Image (cartoon, rainbow, N blue to C red; front, side):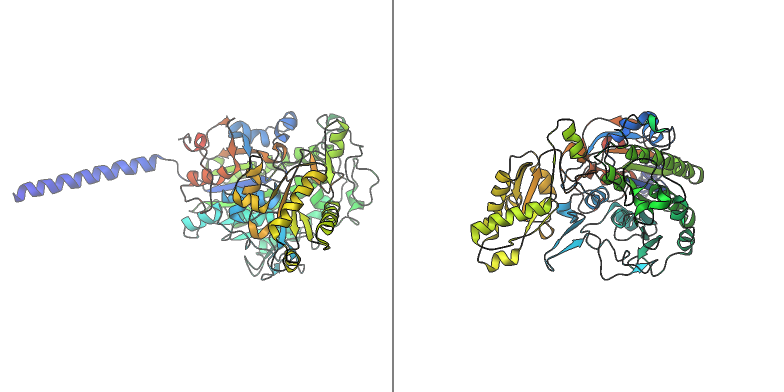
Length: 553
């Protein structure tokens, strides 16, 4: 009996060993995690900028990523508004403003009744200059990010750094637990951060700031990269639809940066050289922080902001915008080439996308016989307040029109014995019937009820974070924008604002493309599946199985 027991125990042990070996082979045969993840967000890059400029892109920039990666050709945001802070937050949290709280670049703080910038944090100080530009943090973000989850999964050993000219473009991707986030302070011409991350800039950042690259870029005029007659994808250089720098009479090439810098303190942001400086800073981050060279996966978040500034000023049909993308293509080629030489693309997982698209200039669209126009927020406020004065005999019941939302003076409404929902309902009907260019209007009560047959209702529902939103949401007609007569704007739930490129490249990513719809909330769960980590707690997206199930061995 004892002998039989011994034999049974031996057999069980052998089976356990065999099972362990089998499991080891299964897991060890899977791809090792990448040494480095690079998230690239191109601010205001509409999907159209890929095919439109395709023939002019080099072989080693956008084309290389797309031809050798996996291109999701029908990726769209599902929230309103399509702005920078909500877009970056969506990419990295896998969720929408209704959950992550980033309902705009600015919103009305109900406690103070003042407009609050999304990343403002009065509890921290600027590190790197004496300005107020560094009093920022991710404290208003109400969920974790994929970068936070990576930090937790490695017991905080992974290194995470976010960079962008815009503070919000570096802060939200890097998350709450980042080693650092850096952004550009034009007043000091320094890359800065805040005491949320560190008490003092690293020596290599101080050294970078001493290079005075902005002054180097401003020694030359901004002329087109190629002969201007080759920019056939854009409208004529001299037109009435584009804005001008202070000191310029016309929005035409060449732009005399050496002269213009004296009257335009944020000039770098509005030129392609802002992206070039971002690329140079990113290369210094990789080198000095030794990212991708440790035992754990590191994550570098880069946002190229100048495409947005140039786009706002000149519009998506301008030669300036085309030239900015052709120059960005060269910057991408150099950056990815350096990554390949130092870390290796086999060890590096890259995704490239955008935080939103853009609408063409309404005056230009009207010249092509489309129905388009501009809402002037002051006109809307005055019109609605005059209407409410006639209804209730009370002045200034509307405080703001921001993010296509009416913010009532709630204290005044309640003190006057009025009902918020009743006033909102009257405002909704008035705007719908009396303001030109309106497609639909939703009250906050309607959004909270979740009931509407309007096809764009879900965008507004996904963008509704109650304490940071207004009482009435206004959805413009297509090609109507807020406050801009020249240049361009974005924010709507329409295809031109929500449809963006999405490409995964490097490491074990299979080559291919996908024409089926992908939600931008799917980026983070896809990355979580690829990295073998838990997605953020607010994530509502799903992994893109065409990528996660077809990894190259």
